[in-house]
Length: 73
Image (cartoon, rainbow, N blue to C red; front, side):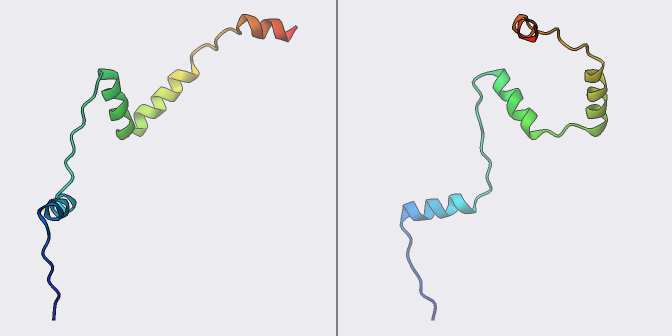
């Protein structure tokens, strides 16, 4: 024999929330926050990643700062 329990209205709402598909909306305060969130979830295509690495390698190295030059003496 199966035991049947009656759920309260609050328990029914919680159960429905658990079983419902998760469609959460998120609001962003700034466009930068939106872009950071999107960048974290978007995969960069391998071709683009290779091109980016090649272009970064061609950049000149920054000149040492004054304190690095001073400590090198």
